[in-house]
Amino acid sequence: MASVASWILNAFFISGLLVTSAPTVFAVSNAGALMFKSPPGYSSKSYNASATPTASMANKDFSDQALAFLWDQVGPVATGPVTTTVSPTPEPSSYPKPGVLHPLIPSYDTKLAAIQLPKNFKWGVASSAFQVEGAAKDEGKGPSIWDLLSHRVPNLVADNTTGDVVAEHYYLYKQDFARLKSLGIPSFSPSISWPRIFPFGKGPVNEAGVKHYDDVIAELVKNGITPVVTLFHWDTPLALFNEYGAWTDRQIVDDYFNYAKFVIERYDQYVDTWFTINEPQYCNWQYSYYPAGKYYPAYNGVTGGIEARFLCGHYTLLAHAKVAKWYHEEFKGRGRISFKNSGNYFEPNTTSQADQVAVQRNYDFSIGWFGGPWTDGDYPQSLKDTLGDLLPEYTPTEKALIKGSCDFYAIDG
Image (cartoon, rainbow, N blue to C red; front, side):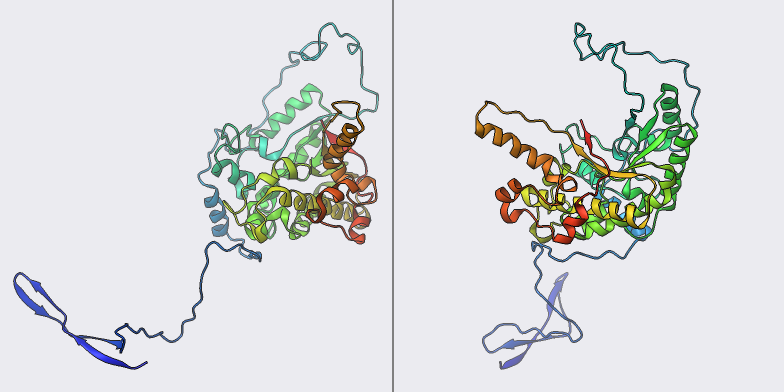
């Protein structure tokens, strides 16, 4: 396009004086439009900030600065009154007891009054790391998805509380275990915080976090309390959501395995029973409601709902099965391993055949969904018939991996 050189005399007034500067040269096309040159050595592209991410952003930065960035994503974190491990104080010789019967059992129903547990019945108490530990940001811990959700999403937690402080079990565990011993509790099932061991979900191990759980296990053994360890209670490292969407992507299977393998290899000599996953049904009643695409990327357009629910369940069961197979066949673990189902109960409204079928369908979509270890390693036919392409498929190799992968059946009430 032809152009002509134009000269403009730059002039302006200062206190009544006309001041001139050097003339400016620019190109003007014959049509009168301005022409701009592309400086050499630069590339260009068109950007779309609303595009759906399809490829994961592989994380190779495990620096302190990267960890600080993750916590900036969460926001300010509260610190509790206790900031160092507390030695146990003396315990009373006896505690007040609630009486013969539970307060929710009618006083006129006395048939349970003399009931005793069988001689070899194993029992104890349990907790989850996010709900009792506190010390959310202390000693190198990375944020979990629940740190983000409880801080950033209004009313996702009913009273908008967080896990920043809670019971401060992270610093009071010695006191807590002394009380369990005094109460005669034979077993305790803690869950271990994945982002406290691996702040980014993978990469280097956090030395301070490992040292803490070393002492947790040692303190339980010292008090004569049997450790029954839950490896995962849904405090997924936030970094994995940022990187590839966590439980809606197959990469989570290997990252979870890497974490679980480390913990089991370190503590198996003191732990007889392992739970890989606490209530995989969580994929339905919480995970599927996570706000993907609002507070972290929604990879491949998976923003929640039914698709997220069944992808999560699919990879949860594969992650469990991979750990269980390794535990028995390669590591030759000394204990037993399973996962804990979520208790569900349904009954028909009437005696009709349709209501009977509806009850079974409800069980299939809750308990049967994760029933593969006790069947052929696959999903119930009712899920396949109802969901069609929404339900991921297991390969024959994966079905064989899942089948028989639980040493016993476990269910939370």
